[in-house]
Picture: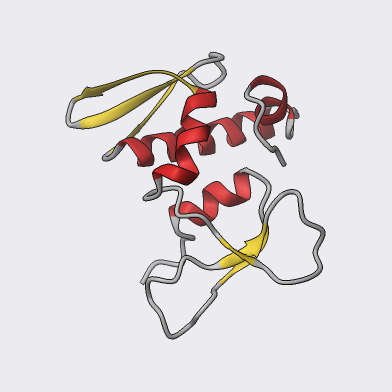
Amino acid sequence: MSDEKPLHHRVAEALGWTHIGPGNLMDINDPGVGYPPQYQVIGQKERVPRFDEDWGATGPIMEAMVDGMEFRQHQWCMTDGRGHVGAAFGDTMLEAVCNLVLATAAYEDETDQRGQVFRGDYGLTGR
C-alpha cells in the first residue's frame, strides 16, 4: 500500500483545506474529512470533495482555470488559461483538472506567490 495521499486530498490541500484525515475508518470508500479554506479550525470537519470523481466539485474549478482541452495520446490534456503552467494531463478529464490544480500550486510555491494564482487569476479560494 502506498503512503501517498489520494489525489482528491492533495487537490484539497492545494485549494486551502487543512487537517485532512480519514472520516469513517470502516468505509474504504469514505473520502475523508477536513476543514475547507474558509473555516477556522474549530467545529465539525466536512467531507473532502472527490475532485477526481465529482463534476459538481471540479466543474467550477475547470471553468475558472482551463482554457482548452483535448484528448491526445490516450490522455486528456487541460491547458492553463493564464499560462502559468502550460498544460496538465490525466486519464480522465477530472484527473487532468486535478493535475492542473497541483501544477499551479507547485508554481505558486516555486515563485513565492502562495495563494495569489488561485485567488488573483482564477477567482478561486486559495491557500
